[in-house]
Image 1: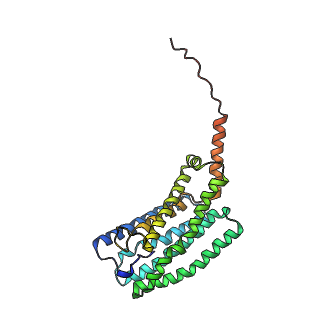
Image 2: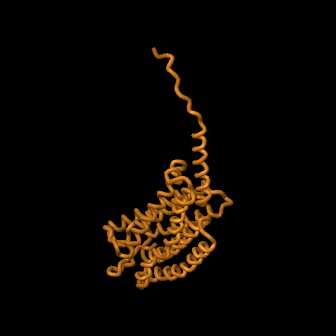
Length: 276
């Protein structure tokens, strides 16, 4: 995601004032550092025969490139920013594919086809967005100012649908509650918390992009989208496998612990023979 630029103050150049430069530098450092840690953790826990694990690694690496353009100056700044934005958009598309792979068991055949077909069709927008981004940051052509407002629509609905399906199936298809799952597997609880946080941050960022809210942050360098991206990518890293197999393991462990606690006899305490 390239920095958004308002139509009233279109300036495709590198941030000049100290506050904006520091904030953007900090945000990119946070983004790259978080993705680097997630990549190492994923590589340490991945299984070589699991395709989804490899895709998560690729997803993280693709996103990291867009956190380094602040080091460059014109004219390399615009070229590198546009190239890294294409890499970031590819990572976002891959994240939606990974979300489908994780929630695939919750879709019927037509739901999966619709999900994948619409995701594929959405890539035509990202081709246009890649051109608009390059033309704006290198030749100051204003198409990007218009296309930028459609980014949330073509980036976020798919993984949010997968998230909603996860929560719906936990509620209706499993006999244990959210609290039971969290007590049995704190890691699964962390993932669900991160999913909620990422959805909230994505909504806030979308409202900011559309001009519905105005954050007290210098225009063009707001870090909300970086927080949202890190949160949703952490969900892939915390739980590498698909949702259903993970839920089955956690719920089985919960009921096993429940049966074990119920079958353990409790003996009444006898009188204290040492008492007077």
